[in-house]
Length: 171
Image (tube, rainbow, N blue to C red; front, top):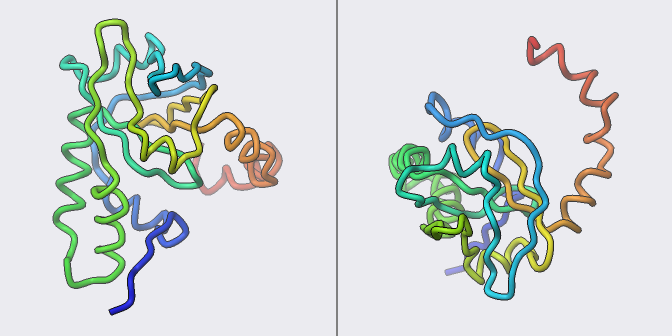
């Protein structure tokens, strides 16, 4: 039997939106640039800390475009429940489950407001040194700074391209 390799190019935006639809969530927004220490920890900005669960527990999993996604405990509970409801007999559903649930790690925030990114997830996102935290509504993206800088230089990240597509968003 051939092995199935899962990567973020196999995951479509429609798939993610169907899993995350109708979730109540904190409104993470803004971009921050903390450093990773020698143990793989970073300081969570106070604005984000206020929005995370009172138990200081979060979940980090594979994201798209080479980043990681950090969810608060209550939002992850909804996302993982929606993922677990997907079919085990549908190939795309299995990919989604393996990619997001299989890569998920529960992480505790220490009393100083630091979160440890597990080594396998740091390796996945090529993280070391400086990172970018990008609040995007119900989750925080965690990027290696080099990857984020490359993404920002993408033509579709251009203000004119974004402006051309704003009509679809009804903003």
